[in-house]
Amino acid sequence: MILSGLEIEKRMGKDIIIEPFDKKALNPNSYNLKLHNEMLVYEEHNLDMKKKNEAKLIEIPEDGLWLEPGKLYLGRTHEYTETLNCVPMLEGRSSVGRLGLFIHVTAGFGDVGFKGYWTLEIHCVQPVKIYPYVEVCQIYYHTICGDYIEYKSGKYQNNSGIQPSMLYKDFQ
Image (cartoon, rainbow, N blue to C red; front, side):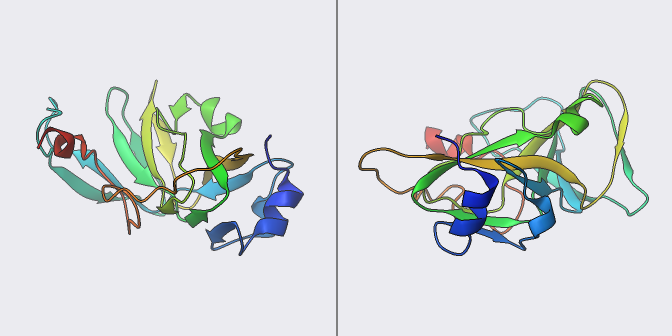
């Protein structure tokens, strides 16, 4: 089952941590998360799964940044989250999707026990201007049934910022 917005609020500080938390971002069954003011872009056009692909940090200015089609941008949520005893899920907001902006290409399925910022895989179908700290996605939570092992992966757990792919570590 998906938690209601009221249940998310009730579990805040216990099973669910969202920092900073703003009650105005609470929806009937989700919570809106904001885009931080920094993004990563890969330096090479051709990416190799077996190697660390270098990326450069760009800042989203207050007056906005134009995104180009055919390019992958890695952003992150402004909010730090922790989730226990339920499964976090992330989706782009429909208002953003209606501009042809894909906020989370894949991996919207979180793990019980995840702690950190969500890296957002962003791309657009036509040029679109984005702004820092705009609500671009929403987190929602499923209950979990049965015993489970809490997520503790060293690759992405307890991150402090945008995480490029670390798939290359699986080949080592």
